Image 1 (cartoon, rainbow, N blue to C red):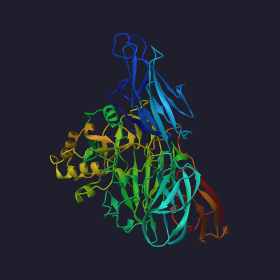
Image 2: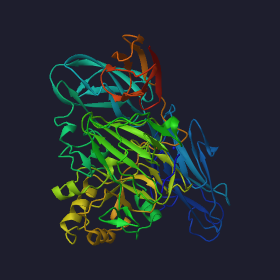
Image 3: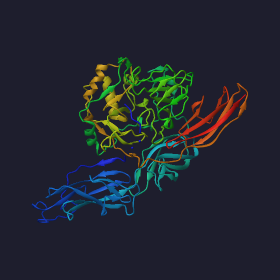
Length: 598
């Protein structure tokens, strides 16, 4: 089941016992009866929790308030005396949900007040300190650098004037471009892998997640060539995407979201896991999402998009007409997944259908298997969350090897209009604030005892403790995705149903993007796209050359497909207009050159 659409700043919900307005650190007033004793019949008192709070810009926080001594429990909320707050100070809803302003005001403190609707003189207040947001990094351009002087574009979110980039412990000369882009310059004296981080300034100075930057040498020790050609074959130890990818991050010690219990209860604490993959056939179709591995001999075929052409990566793609479609011959999502072991790209289609010598699809995406690509914000992919599908599959070959070293894709029945990077797309079918944003991650509790499960299931469950589950689509709740393989034991996989949603916890969600705070930044820039000859005789090779900056993916259509480097040689069969597409986390740009063949 699939939905197409766009993520809500994370809501940290703190449920604490309400403290009495007097003698509790809260400011409060009572009216009626004895004002020194709010428990006296006829008196009204208000308690607010918490009495103080530190809240980062752009995030949300839930205050709770209780009324004693009055049957009317309605609360009126205000910020610095302004009913409902304001854009500059932060707004607060009738349920106590406070949303901090996008920018920290001066001074960086406000007062949230809960007032009894029955007695305007009865209130309690909380002192709020507003802090700058924590930056988040999603990638660098280039993805690796040589030793010596370098210039680096850093992409992410929540950057500020005064944000400081670091290579290891060394501060870089940092220029603020936008909330989603910084430029950094410096010098690297030695080869190796170094962390890039960004520190935001006070108030509430905080550091981003690290990104590994390769200085000198190869981006990845092992190449894609070790992947075995065929359908459902072994990757031979190859790990898709960089260690910085959200799929490959160890989250065993990550913080738990303060609203975790409420979200799990909303999902349904008693819902068990279901392996949406297995051996054999169901209604004539394979059980799971199949994949194929192609090599450089595979012909490139054009792709025609029917649903989301503007948010899809153009072809051609090395997808054979014999490659399997998910679920066929039955209707469904009809995904097609192909990995290229020669050029290290992953190709994914949704709602795919074969043509005479081409493919059509609802949407599609190309992924650089050596990188850490962030899909353009608000774009779909072949998945509702704008994520790649393949890295989230449970595969038999890695399970048999005894380790699954990545997160697993799963679905939930309901999602809200929000997403968490590296997801880029929302597919809301619920307005409930407890519904999951796309990209939400669950982790199996470390206390969960897996010893009662088979060795094969223990491998899967232990991966949930270390890498977790990533919400990627609307569908049946707690369904985990995998690839079909006749070596699976379906009866054994069914035993995973003994693991329930209540055995998981929600990893802290930040940043959460909704329609109101989606990052904006510069599209890739094409300095030049040209040919060494623009008028040639039939059969004459032509070299296309280009210079681009800020791109995470480059595709040339027709004939060429996804490319690296800055040139390629082709032999056009007839007069052809080649289009160069460059794509990054914010948009795509294109340029054309026409070759006349006579």
